[in-house]
Amino acid sequence: MMKPRARIIGTGMYVPDRVVTNDDLAKRMDTSDEWIRQRTGIEERRYIEPGQQPADLASAATKNALEAAQLGPEDIDCIVLTTLSSQADFPGTSFFLQDQLGLSDTPCFDVRAQCSGFIYGLAVGNGFIHSGMYRRVLVVGCEVHSTGIDISDEGRDVAVIFGDGAGAALLEANDDESDDSGLLEIRLHAEGKFAKKLWIEAPGSGFWPVRINHELIDERRHFPYMEGRFVFKHAVRRMPEVLLETLHAASLKLEDVDLFLFHQANLRINEFVMEQMGIPAERCSNNIQRYGNCSSASIPILLDEAARSGRLEPGHIVSMTSFGSGFTWASAVLRW
Ligand code: COA
Image (cartoon, rainbow, N blue to C red; front, side, top):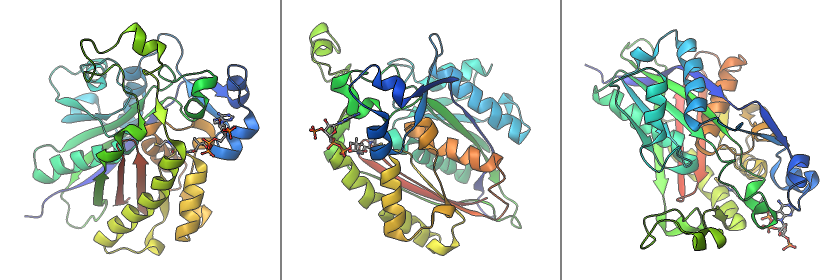
């Protein structure tokens, strides 16, 4: 018997209502709308309201995905949540999500692969389905960056990039041999040598005798550190590499792809990659202008917007590619 292939049967997204424009940030740090737009393409992003929790975002995105699939939380066999901005140090955000969904014993866990998290999560879900262990796996990318960035002159290079949001995709086993929709190939990569080029080091159990103290906070080591140009250089090399590797594995060519979804780190990175690869703008979708970089939530948010806008039709080939902290880079290709 053919091994089941995972297909996406519902997508959802959620971003907080609070819009933060570049001008809003310019009131709190030495930056400008012009600088941010020119270097990143970002116009605005969303931040949570006081009291909103990461699991609230994940739960809203999940409910939309379930509604699209016409299923309920009890139909999910396993939850994979991807994040770099966990609600608590432990346990992972997935446990708070599971509780909010009213589930009592559905397995859940977090995947930590930063901006490539969603594609890593898809690979995990695909593996579970392919092995026959589960029939339906929820993969949710969920990030709250606004409470972790340094909104001051010192942190301006990183702070202007990030936004909050969540995106979800419900995977289901497709064992109908006459239906060729589903995930075709996924490729994952990482290079830990560059872990410190984009990271938050504290709180961390690498510190002794405590993970966080006033000194670490005074030294601002609980805020993200990024070597922007270094990250940019690696992103524009690794994304085309893994995208082509994945298409090749699926015996597809660039021309076969109907929609390219790239991680939303910086519009200039994506424009550079598209130009380098000869991908026309109309076959690519970006939303960083409105949401900033939502790390592992960026790609599922893009996917949900594409699905709901009618841009995706049955049979369409969709390519998703990411690059992020770790470093990690990954690509997935699917038939819608
Ligand atoms: N507003 C205004 N000026 C800023 C600024 C801000 N928010 N952030 C940095 N600057 C200043 C710098 O201080 C520097 O000033 P100087 O020339 O007087 O020293 C100047 O702008 C250029 O800084 P630099 O860091 O070299 O800018 P850049 O052209 O590399 O752009 C990034 C910065 C962050 C936009 C860019 O490097 C980038 O996007 N990198 C990839 C980041 C990424 O993808 N991260 C996420 C991966 S998941």
